[in-house]
Image 1 (cartoon, one colour):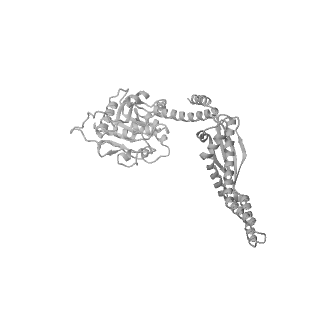
Image 2: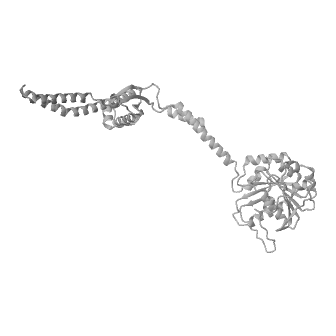
Length: 465
């Protein structure tokens, strides 16, 4: 696409008429500089800017237009010329035209016209100053001619006459601002516009950046799971059955979703009874602890003994959700201490075993014979639910999943990305983790309100968020 855009720009710019540019440099010498007086840079810059503005006045442009062959209109010259102060004491006069000769002629005519106009203005000012002096000189000459040589008034008139003549001479010789063309206009044979190669290169780079950003955007948008049935799309992507869709709804809708998950797990066709379940997630914010905690509470509603074990030994959260302490817990038990699961006050059939004291090597503990022995000792429980760390950065989750009868993967419907989910699934399948299904969390609320309603005979249960 970028090459195509560059080719189109190159062809389009090549078809444009050529434009050549010529520039002349005009020097401005203030009057004070000719009197050997100090001229500041600000004074020189002010003079240059003043005469640069004079060069763009319509009367001067009209005289320049009339001097050209063939003549141009004032509007055409206004579009083609550019006058700017290059630095203190210099004015840059540039002009564009279809040919180098025409560009040079226009820039030279305008710059020379500026010089001539300023000189004419200066001469006019001198003439105005001399006119009254010359009238007085003429009057004195007539009076001196009419008086006899012996008349005593002649001396006074003679002195006045000489003073006026000297004043006229000083006026004629007084310094004025001088402008001169120091660099005549000359246009190179290479057009300044169009520049097909340069413009095509810029178009290629610009299109490359825009196309790259567009490609990234399309990948990010295309990597999301969208559509009316996000859960089904996710299940199809990773080739796993969707055991439950946990909506962003009220507690009753969420409870119904966990009851469905509980039913699917308990009556799932498998080689043996599903006794231990590992709740896995591809990231830290997908809601795996939320799913593990509420699944355990849902199973407990059937008055089946349930144990919830916090296997996330790096960043445990189960104890915070259930309002208990982190230790003593799993790590302390595996270390040889006498630790047992604790009952949850609002769920009589549920017991929780928190993560326990921090350990420097969680993988070693979860892969140890002690951990396997701990799981074997829980055969009396109806179900054991393990919360786990995220899959990917560490091997903790895989170590837990391999020890359990079944593993379920929690996927966030809002944040899930196809490529990341594929990597997670590849890692789990390579390790032969017994995945039985997926729980899609944070799905849109159902359009029709849930059929489920808690009856007065059912125990009231609150969702642990």
